[in-house]
Image (cartoon, rainbow, N blue to C red; front, side, top):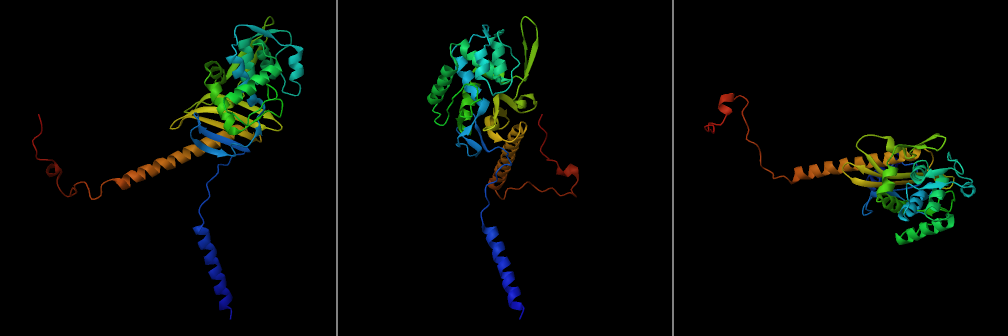
Length: 319
């Protein structure tokens, strides 16, 4: 009498196993900590990996890429000097600290490095004034530049990214990154690992290490441009343009990562996933070539027992 229950159980197990096998495999998602991300060719024509790339997200200091782009395009004179004012401190309240000082004239080239490498909020505000743009005017120019680029989800309420209402999407941030990278001056600064400001007249030195630590790596991957950002709404963010063997220029944007170094670990995970997929594609291409080769064509078989002298062609050697 116990045969029927056992048989029913075995049938159920078989049906479950069959349905599990028949179910199509879901696409594999990389183990990325960031909440949203985008990976694609620099020209934007090919998406290589993404998660909610069109989700509107706070972008913190990634905003500075647009601010500096507007300032440089407005004709920033690098050799001129700009004095930081009390208003810079008032507008930067609530943001990160600065090592710059009030009422000291800093060369604009030094402020440019402070803004992009050290993400100094006061340097951004000073650079705006250097081209005749106060904070509201600079913000308005940033929004106008975004509209001109066709970025419908990008909006700025301040030039620095302190405001949590500075928002964009991973996809649109990649467009800002590309535009910044196409400016020779901005790209040159973004690629630097470190830069030293020598303050006058005291000769005090301020060393800025690039917050995009991917610039410190040596090897096959080359950093072409990049910027980091953080506030409590955005989380830890990074946007970077890399030259990858086999892929060319690739944009990586990760928003909402949980840690300062985790955002870079996320980029490494995404790079590894790209390389894994490429290896898989190359193996498939190689296998396809083998299968497509003419069948029935074999090399002449040589009898192992045949003396070496007899294996050679008896055709006279050419002179």
